[in-house]
Length: 287
Length: 234
Image (tube, rainbow over all chains, first blue to last red; front, side):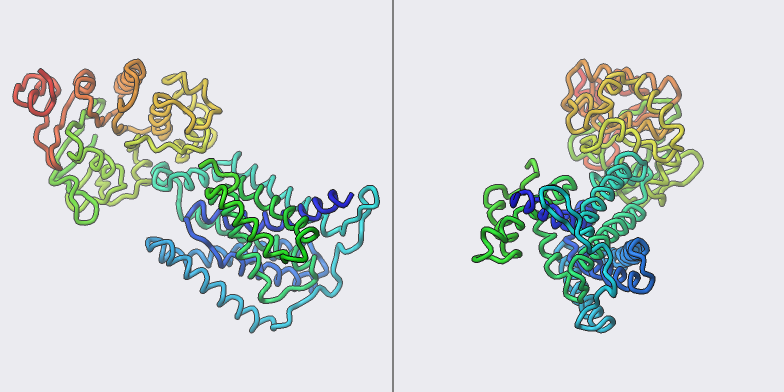
């Protein structure tokens, strides 16, 4: 039963990682930018989530507001931060991205205070019995169901709609996609909007599960999400999903069996190093 | 159909093509011939809008399209099957065709797709396959089919026969003749001179980024100097 519980806890964490890392991998796949500032949109989403819930009492409204605000902010980050330097070498965008993230952390500290915000009446906190004495918080179950739903919707949009196919074509060969009438600007805006909205989705859940939203909450997810997209094979959506879930489960087991020698975050990076020694291309990339 | 006046294009300070003038007649096949590095592919990419013209004009019909983007040119009726085919390799055959037809309403996709499949029935059999898993011949058919989805009046094809089996080359050339008979204008870049001379109405020969000969295919065949020096025909 312990194993089942560990796997389930790992899946909860893995779903949050997946939502953060998917946005990052969408951006990397399209523009080959390691978008560290993605974590700032995760934090922004968490703040909008807690503020909206506290103001209205509606968690659903909080998700909508957080995803919309972070989505629009993501498009602004692309247009103002990355677009002017797209023709420069990739490390220029990486440095800009790190700078944007540091600046965003300070803005959160100035605007919302250094000590963080909590939910006045955090929703979905009661325990639900599953089977064999196993219990989960409602929020943990909702994380898994919500992430599965959002990924299913994204997969549908990506594979079954013209705009989704256009986005995939742009990732594959932007010049050719453009020559068949795809607007690169529109595809890039959509990618940043969707990726940033996913980060906000994860941010609201993390804020709710920890009942705390603070300026530095994006630091660890920022680097862990980078580790996940490397593990999954850079730019691979399916690989990122599998890597996120695997990492969640590895961490879950690691905190029990390796907890005395490594903390949770160290386990993730030890796993990353171990995988890259064996498969430098990532766990799920073919080459 | 297409008129190029004194076109110069290239990359940075390198000039791939200088001072090219050429006219394509409607409903004909023009073969653009020359050795590696002669400037054939760059010329096609310049007409498609992917390589900027440094001087000169490109007219399509009566319209000067020199300053238009690739998207605007495909909307005008200029499509390209580029060097290396450049398919969307992770997408299915159907989705590659879907991208090719994005400038037209979604409701018309099925009709256009079926027209491509009529021309290349093999694509119908592989419609759900991933483009990157297709054979070289199937990929070439898909590259042409994808360009046809845009319903072009001018179709440019780069290195049609490169790396393909003779049977597949025959099939592709038969398709070109069908398209020409339907009224399409075709600009064909080829290293395989014999093949081009077999179907082309007009020929333009390039060398080191300059036009060295142009005229009808019949005149090219009857020009002994040209045949020996540039076309490898004896």
